[in-house]
Length: 307
Image (tube, rainbow, N blue to C red):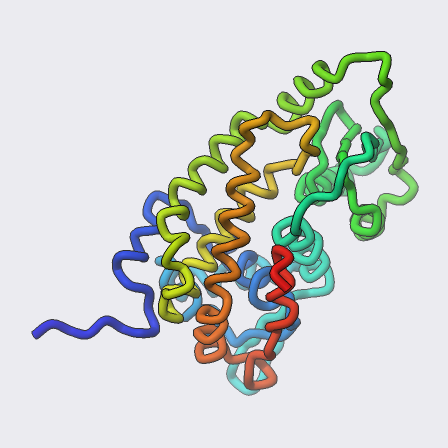
Protein backbone atom coordinates (compact mmCIF):
# COMPACT_ATOMS: atom_id res chain seq x y z
CA UNK A 1 0.00 0.00 0.00
CA UNK A 2 1.44 3.36 -1.04
CA UNK A 3 2.01 5.93 1.68
CA UNK A 4 0.71 9.46 1.38
CA UNK A 5 3.31 12.20 1.01
CA UNK A 6 4.11 14.11 4.20
CA UNK A 7 2.49 17.57 3.84
CA UNK A 8 5.22 19.00 6.11
CA UNK A 9 8.05 17.83 3.81
CA UNK A 10 8.83 19.03 0.27
CA UNK A 11 7.74 16.80 -2.60
CA UNK A 12 10.30 14.44 -4.10
CA UNK A 13 10.17 16.39 -7.37
CA UNK A 14 11.18 19.62 -5.68
CA UNK A 15 13.70 17.86 -3.49
CA UNK A 16 15.74 17.28 -6.66
CA UNK A 17 16.13 21.06 -6.92
CA UNK A 18 19.01 20.82 -4.45
CA UNK A 19 20.83 18.16 -6.44
CA UNK A 20 24.48 19.02 -6.97
CA UNK A 21 24.54 21.83 -4.43
CA UNK A 22 26.94 21.89 -1.49
CA UNK A 23 24.69 22.77 1.42
CA UNK A 24 26.71 23.23 4.59
CA UNK A 25 24.97 23.42 7.95
CA UNK A 26 26.68 26.69 8.94
CA UNK A 27 25.83 28.53 5.73
CA UNK A 28 22.25 27.21 5.62
CA UNK A 29 21.63 28.39 9.19
CA UNK A 30 23.04 31.82 8.30
CA UNK A 31 20.57 31.93 5.40
CA UNK A 32 17.67 30.95 7.68
CA UNK A 33 18.59 33.50 10.32
CA UNK A 34 19.00 36.22 7.73
CA UNK A 35 15.79 35.43 5.86
CA UNK A 36 13.47 34.23 8.63
CA UNK A 37 14.76 35.46 12.00
CA UNK A 38 16.30 38.89 11.33
CA UNK A 39 12.95 40.57 10.51
CA UNK A 40 11.67 39.50 13.94
CA UNK A 41 14.72 39.03 16.19
CA UNK A 42 13.66 36.02 18.27
CA UNK A 43 15.46 33.02 19.71
CA UNK A 44 14.54 29.80 17.87
CA UNK A 45 14.29 26.43 19.61
CA UNK A 46 17.03 24.01 18.55
CA UNK A 47 14.37 21.41 17.72
CA UNK A 48 12.82 23.82 15.21
CA UNK A 49 16.19 24.47 13.60
CA UNK A 50 16.69 20.72 13.22
CA UNK A 51 13.28 20.43 11.57
CA UNK A 52 13.93 23.37 9.23
CA UNK A 53 17.28 21.92 8.13
CA UNK A 54 16.07 18.34 7.59
CA UNK A 55 14.61 18.86 4.06
CA UNK A 56 18.07 19.93 2.89
CA UNK A 57 19.72 16.69 4.02
CA UNK A 58 21.27 18.20 7.15
CA UNK A 59 20.83 15.98 10.20
CA UNK A 60 20.44 16.93 13.84
CA UNK A 61 24.11 16.29 14.68
CA UNK A 62 25.24 18.73 12.01
CA UNK A 63 22.74 21.35 13.18
CA UNK A 64 23.94 21.04 16.79
CA UNK A 65 27.57 21.39 15.68
CA UNK A 66 26.72 24.38 13.47
CA UNK A 67 24.87 26.23 16.24
CA UNK A 68 27.82 25.66 18.57
CA UNK A 69 30.26 27.04 15.97
CA UNK A 70 28.08 30.02 15.06
CA UNK A 71 27.72 30.87 18.74
CA UNK A 72 31.50 30.64 19.22
CA UNK A 73 31.97 32.91 16.17
CA UNK A 74 29.54 35.49 17.63
CA UNK A 75 26.80 34.94 15.06
CA UNK A 76 24.32 33.47 17.55
CA UNK A 77 23.61 33.78 21.26
CA UNK A 78 22.23 30.85 23.24
CA UNK A 79 19.44 30.92 25.83
CA UNK A 80 18.45 28.03 28.05
CA UNK A 81 14.81 27.68 29.15
CA UNK A 82 14.24 24.54 31.16
CA UNK A 83 15.79 21.68 29.22
CA UNK A 84 15.52 23.45 25.88
CA UNK A 85 18.12 25.54 24.07
CA UNK A 86 17.09 28.56 21.99
CA UNK A 87 19.36 30.42 19.59
CA UNK A 88 18.95 34.04 18.51
CA UNK A 89 21.18 36.37 16.55
CA UNK A 90 23.90 38.04 18.60
CA UNK A 91 24.36 41.79 18.25
CA UNK A 92 27.25 41.21 15.83
CA UNK A 93 25.31 38.51 13.96
CA UNK A 94 22.29 40.76 13.54
CA UNK A 95 24.52 43.54 12.21
CA UNK A 96 26.05 41.14 9.66
CA UNK A 97 22.76 39.80 8.33
CA UNK A 98 21.21 43.27 8.19
CA UNK A 99 24.18 44.54 6.18
CA UNK A 100 23.92 41.58 3.82
CA UNK A 101 20.13 41.98 3.67
CA UNK A 102 20.46 45.51 2.32
CA UNK A 103 22.09 43.99 -0.74
CA UNK A 104 20.16 40.72 -0.98
CA UNK A 105 16.67 42.23 -0.83
CA UNK A 106 17.40 45.59 -2.46
CA UNK A 107 15.22 46.95 -5.23
CA UNK A 108 16.57 48.76 -8.26
CA UNK A 109 20.07 50.18 -7.82
CA UNK A 110 20.35 53.94 -7.58
CA UNK A 111 21.84 55.82 -10.49
CA UNK A 112 25.62 56.01 -10.14
CA UNK A 113 27.22 59.42 -9.71
CA UNK A 114 30.64 58.21 -10.91
CA UNK A 115 32.21 58.28 -7.45
CA UNK A 116 34.01 55.48 -5.62
CA UNK A 117 34.48 54.94 -1.91
CA UNK A 118 38.08 53.97 -1.18
CA UNK A 119 39.14 52.25 2.05
CA UNK A 120 42.87 52.26 2.78
CA UNK A 121 44.25 50.24 5.68
CA UNK A 122 47.53 51.06 7.40
CA UNK A 123 50.25 48.45 7.07
CA UNK A 124 50.92 48.25 10.82
CA UNK A 125 47.40 47.12 11.79
CA UNK A 126 47.26 43.78 13.64
CA UNK A 127 46.73 40.77 11.38
CA UNK A 128 43.53 39.72 13.21
CA UNK A 129 42.01 43.19 12.75
CA UNK A 130 43.08 43.32 9.09
CA UNK A 131 41.54 39.91 8.38
CA UNK A 132 38.26 40.73 10.11
CA UNK A 133 38.01 44.08 8.35
CA UNK A 134 38.73 42.57 4.94
CA UNK A 135 36.21 39.77 5.45
CA UNK A 136 33.44 42.17 6.45
CA UNK A 137 34.23 44.56 3.58
CA UNK A 138 34.17 41.72 1.06
CA UNK A 139 30.73 40.71 2.36
CA UNK A 140 29.70 44.34 1.91
CA UNK A 141 30.73 44.22 -1.75
CA UNK A 142 34.11 45.95 -1.66
CA UNK A 143 36.83 44.76 -4.01
CA UNK A 144 40.53 44.53 -3.19
CA UNK A 145 42.20 46.54 -5.95
CA UNK A 146 45.64 46.55 -4.30
CA UNK A 147 47.13 45.38 -0.97
CA UNK A 148 45.46 47.38 1.77
CA UNK A 149 43.18 49.22 -0.68
CA UNK A 150 39.50 48.33 -1.22
CA UNK A 151 36.90 50.10 -3.34
CA UNK A 152 33.13 50.18 -3.83
CA UNK A 153 31.04 52.23 -6.30
CA UNK A 154 27.85 52.35 -4.22
CA UNK A 155 28.97 51.99 -0.62
CA UNK A 156 26.53 52.42 2.25
CA UNK A 157 28.49 54.78 4.50
CA UNK A 158 26.44 53.89 7.58
CA UNK A 159 27.25 50.21 7.16
CA UNK A 160 30.90 51.04 6.44
CA UNK A 161 31.14 53.06 9.65
CA UNK A 162 29.65 50.16 11.63
CA UNK A 163 32.06 47.67 10.06
CA UNK A 164 35.12 49.78 10.88
CA UNK A 165 33.85 50.36 14.42
CA UNK A 166 33.11 46.67 15.02
CA UNK A 167 36.63 45.80 13.91
CA UNK A 168 38.01 48.54 16.22
CA UNK A 169 39.99 49.81 13.27
CA UNK A 170 39.12 53.52 13.37
CA UNK A 171 42.75 54.52 13.92
CA UNK A 172 44.00 52.36 11.07
CA UNK A 173 41.57 53.11 8.23
CA UNK A 174 41.33 56.10 5.90
CA UNK A 175 38.15 56.51 3.84
CA UNK A 176 38.21 58.68 0.73
CA UNK A 177 36.19 59.38 -2.40
CA UNK A 178 37.52 59.01 -5.92
CA UNK A 179 36.11 59.60 -9.40
CA UNK A 180 37.23 59.03 -12.98
CA UNK A 181 38.56 61.95 -14.97
CA UNK A 182 36.72 62.66 -18.21
CA UNK A 183 40.01 63.24 -20.00
CA UNK A 184 40.80 59.50 -19.73
CA UNK A 185 38.87 56.57 -21.28
CA UNK A 186 36.69 54.32 -19.11
CA UNK A 187 37.75 51.03 -20.77
CA UNK A 188 40.79 50.44 -18.50
CA UNK A 189 38.53 50.90 -15.46
CA UNK A 190 36.03 48.39 -16.87
CA UNK A 191 38.84 45.90 -17.44
CA UNK A 192 40.21 46.49 -13.93
CA UNK A 193 36.78 45.88 -12.38
CA UNK A 194 36.31 42.72 -14.44
CA UNK A 195 39.65 41.46 -13.15
CA UNK A 196 39.25 42.63 -9.54
CA UNK A 197 35.78 41.17 -9.03
CA UNK A 198 36.23 38.07 -11.27
CA UNK A 199 33.11 39.03 -13.19
CA UNK A 200 33.43 36.07 -15.57
CA UNK A 201 33.04 33.62 -12.67
CA UNK A 202 30.18 35.67 -11.21
CA UNK A 203 28.36 35.67 -14.57
CA UNK A 204 28.68 31.86 -14.78
CA UNK A 205 27.22 31.56 -11.27
CA UNK A 206 24.24 33.77 -12.22
CA UNK A 207 23.60 31.63 -15.30
CA UNK A 208 23.64 28.47 -13.19
CA UNK A 209 21.14 29.98 -10.75
CA UNK A 210 18.80 30.95 -13.59
CA UNK A 211 19.01 27.47 -15.09
CA UNK A 212 18.16 25.84 -11.75
CA UNK A 213 15.23 28.01 -10.64
CA UNK A 214 13.60 29.58 -13.70
CA UNK A 215 11.62 26.41 -14.62
CA UNK A 216 9.71 26.85 -11.33
CA UNK A 217 8.96 30.56 -11.71
CA UNK A 218 5.48 30.12 -13.21
CA UNK A 219 4.22 27.66 -10.56
CA UNK A 220 5.81 29.29 -7.49
CA UNK A 221 2.56 30.94 -6.36
CA UNK A 222 0.69 27.60 -6.41
CA UNK A 223 3.14 25.56 -4.33
CA UNK A 224 1.91 24.12 -0.99
CA UNK A 225 3.50 25.48 2.21
CA UNK A 226 6.27 22.88 2.67
CA UNK A 227 7.34 23.18 -0.97
CA UNK A 228 7.16 26.98 -0.83
CA UNK A 229 9.41 27.06 2.26
CA UNK A 230 11.89 24.68 0.63
CA UNK A 231 12.10 26.64 -2.63
CA UNK A 232 12.20 30.04 -0.87
CA UNK A 233 15.06 28.99 1.40
CA UNK A 234 17.04 27.33 -1.38
CA UNK A 235 16.45 30.33 -3.68
CA UNK A 236 17.64 32.85 -1.06
CA UNK A 237 20.56 30.60 -0.10
CA UNK A 238 21.87 30.34 -3.66
CA UNK A 239 21.01 33.94 -4.52
CA UNK A 240 22.88 35.13 -1.41
CA UNK A 241 25.86 32.94 -2.28
CA UNK A 242 26.20 34.50 -5.75
CA UNK A 243 25.18 38.05 -4.81
CA UNK A 244 27.78 38.35 -2.08
CA UNK A 245 30.40 37.66 -4.76
CA UNK A 246 28.85 40.24 -7.06
CA UNK A 247 29.98 43.83 -6.38
CA UNK A 248 26.73 45.20 -7.83
CA UNK A 249 28.64 47.45 -10.19
CA UNK A 250 26.86 50.36 -11.88
CA UNK A 251 25.42 49.81 -15.36
CA UNK A 252 28.25 51.82 -16.91
CA UNK A 253 30.78 49.22 -15.74
CA UNK A 254 28.80 46.07 -16.67
CA UNK A 255 28.56 44.11 -19.93
CA UNK A 256 25.31 44.68 -21.84
CA UNK A 257 24.25 41.03 -21.45
CA UNK A 258 24.99 40.85 -17.70
CA UNK A 259 22.91 37.89 -16.35
CA UNK A 260 22.70 39.36 -12.85
CA UNK A 261 19.90 41.66 -14.03
CA UNK A 262 17.71 38.76 -15.15
CA UNK A 263 18.54 36.75 -12.03
CA UNK A 264 17.54 39.61 -9.72
CA UNK A 265 14.21 40.04 -11.54
CA UNK A 266 13.48 36.31 -11.35
CA UNK A 267 14.35 36.06 -7.64
CA UNK A 268 12.27 39.14 -6.84
CA UNK A 269 9.19 37.72 -8.57
CA UNK A 270 9.61 34.22 -7.10
CA UNK A 271 10.19 35.49 -3.56
CA UNK A 272 6.94 37.46 -3.69
CA UNK A 273 5.06 34.44 -5.05
CA UNK A 274 6.44 32.08 -2.37
CA UNK A 275 6.04 34.40 0.61
CA UNK A 276 2.50 33.69 1.85
CA UNK A 277 2.67 29.89 1.70
CA UNK A 278 6.20 29.68 3.11
CA UNK A 279 5.26 31.95 6.03
CA UNK A 280 2.30 29.65 6.74
CA UNK A 281 4.73 26.74 6.96
CA UNK A 282 7.08 28.65 9.26
CA UNK A 283 4.28 29.69 11.59
CA UNK A 284 3.31 26.03 12.01
CA UNK A 285 6.87 24.73 12.32
CA UNK A 286 8.98 27.21 14.29
CA UNK A 287 8.87 27.50 18.06
CA UNK A 288 10.64 30.45 19.68
CA UNK A 289 11.39 31.42 23.27
CA UNK A 290 8.22 33.54 23.33
CA UNK A 291 6.20 30.58 22.05
CA UNK A 292 5.06 31.76 18.62
CA UNK A 293 6.93 33.19 15.69
CA UNK A 294 6.08 36.88 15.31
CA UNK A 295 4.30 38.13 12.21
CA UNK A 296 6.78 40.00 9.99
CA UNK A 297 4.56 40.32 6.93
CA UNK A 298 5.06 44.07 6.46
CA UNK A 299 8.85 43.82 6.56
CA UNK A 300 8.96 40.77 4.31
CA UNK A 301 6.66 42.29 1.69
CA UNK A 302 8.99 45.28 1.39
CA UNK A 303 11.84 43.02 0.34
CA UNK A 304 12.77 43.35 -3.31
CA UNK A 305 10.48 46.42 -3.23
CA UNK A 306 7.31 44.29 -3.16
CA UNK A 307 5.58 46.46 -0.58
